[in-house]
Length: 221
Image 1 (cartoon, rainbow, N blue to C red):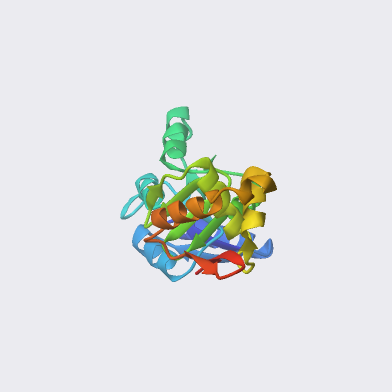
Image 2: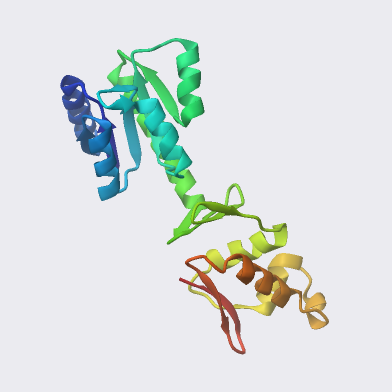
């Protein structure tokens, strides 16, 4: 598990890095927001520990911007501020948890483990392919960070294809998933209609719905 620690206090950075390494986490540190941006461009992290006040800006404002750019990694915000309105501001900006300084190492590790469990569950529901992103938990689809509106049947069809990316699905299988009615397929082209509509809405995505002649359909990336 990779954790990025963003804090300008060298003593805290050293202490957190030592604590987390001993707990078998891989860590990277950044003393300011500029270094943090460079670290985020170089690799992905499972968790970010972010200080509120940094030499080149506010950690909360940095976090809010990250969320606007659809950066979904869990963030634990650290701050010497302990008033309830500061906590609310941090959570509203997109923090997943908030811990006031000074803090207990035992509590910090417990909160980190809880956030990583939550992040792991979230990633299982999130599918990202190039400029395309689908959240199977919230039924939201994005292309180039723009939300695409799908009907319930269209999303159900897309979900089925995404969960079977290397499998060709027949019209019967798709119809059964959408309607649970094999007889309806004999006199209806609803599957083809849904496929056509979905293709149109995903025309700019990094995925395409391939027709395997005589067999059915599958997602192509």
